[in-house]
Image 1 (spheres, rainbow, N blue to C red):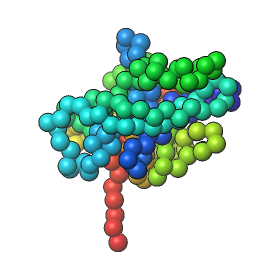
Image 2: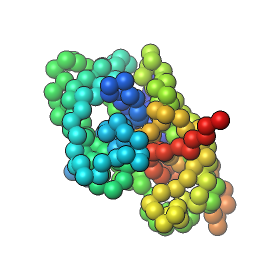
Image 3: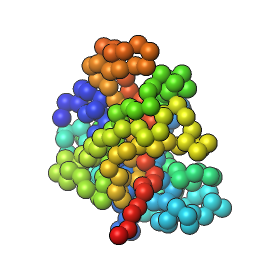
Image 4: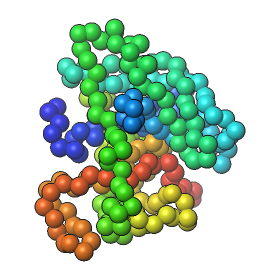
Amino acid sequence: MNATMMTEKMMYSTLRLESNGFTATGFIYKTSNGNFVVISNRHFAEKKDLDKLDYSLTSINDCIEFNIHLNDGSNYLLKDVVTWHLHSSTDLSFFQLNPLLNKHSKNIVPKNYEFIALDSSLIPTQKDLDNLTAIENVLMYGYPNGQFDVVNNYPLIRSGITSSHPSVDYNGEKKGLVDIPCIPGSSGSPIMIINEGIYFQKGKGNISGSRIYFLGIEHASPMRFL
């Protein structure tokens, strides 16, 4: 695929993570020093429910497998032990991607890895958030219930709206609510605002151009049992 639109490029940013029969979504992020990490949820790394997370832990070793795109259109199944670095107070974790890519690069020669990483330039400032309305269209890229395009290794794209104002900390925490189809496997999916062409901005009306914001990471869904 010749990915030219951001909605297409995002398809090369996510990974379907699998470990011990559990699946989740991770995404590739480029740090300020140029390294690549894979970010997902802490509850996937620990294989525990949210209310049972052990915040005394700072890291966990785990065997992870995922397919990663190659520049000839094929995919490479990367399986190895990683060290999850666990956030001290929230449902977030990450592992270093560079060592894995270097270790396995000899297996894909003469091909190269092909992925697109998110970075801090996509994170909205408070001023950007203040310019958003209470209801914004959002997209989520991930692998709900482990589902994905098996042949091409592409995620599924779900759409929804913000349920809480993006500029306000919901319940006083650095969190927000979105109304979007979320089922197990979506954990770790990036939540994006991607407007390409024309979008509405508070106080200015319709604007011609593009707007791309990385709003957050899906980590919990309301459950109802009948």
